[in-house]
Length: 172
Image 1 (cartoon, rainbow, N blue to C red):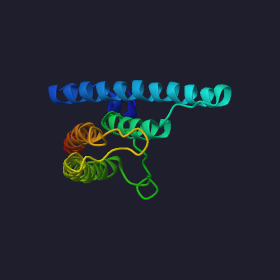
Image 2 (cartoon, rainbow, N blue to C red):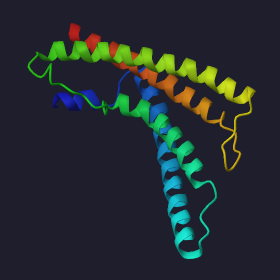
Image 3 (cartoon, rainbow, N blue to C red):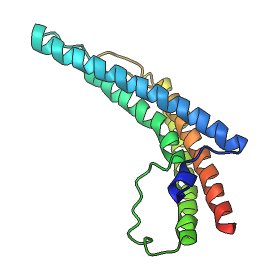
Image 4 (cartoon, rainbow, N blue to C red):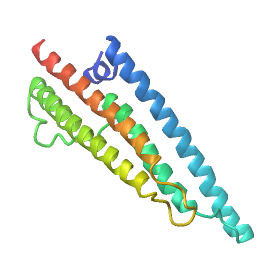
């Protein structure tokens, strides 16, 4: 098996399998949401073109839906090593050095995702407390925040898992 096949293989341990299962579920939900947004956008454009009657507030729905979907895709993307990697500085380095820096970057991303989750909790409470709503449809904005917090929490856990796996691989 090639090195990339090993990285992308289904985790054998229970923690990795649970993280992959949960992140896959969120990614599928994000895919369905993106498909629904696409259908709604097409319906709005056709309604605007054919009947001069677009879907009211379509851009608000697209904005909220896209934000939610992006958050839902992040944990699965990380577990499948789908993040953009710029190996300009480490292409020359031995595999163990590259793996070490993959682990370090996983730890750094876990801290960033955890911090973002914490701030999203604070922001969500503020949005709920002040009853913040969208401009046209007057939809409450706060329900987006718990979904983002869930996805960011899972991303943080996934980053810690992959970092631990990378550091274990270095010792082998």
